[in-house]
Image (cartoon, rainbow, N blue to C red; front, side, top):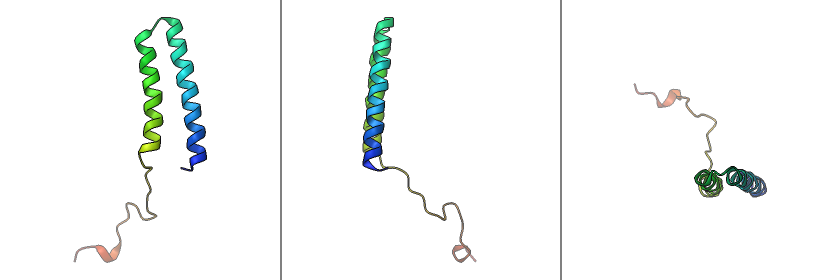
Length: 69
């Protein structure tokens, strides 16, 4: 994924997590507030740290020349 898209998505996740955490705090849900904040940060961390899956064109296809005789 291009860096510009990752940055935009990270900003969006931070905003949504901050707003959701704030509303949970306003409702009096103190523990859930921290869970929401942690989940938002974890999603951003995972997006930047973990590589994306890259598949070959022939994923799952058995070639005839590789079959046992």
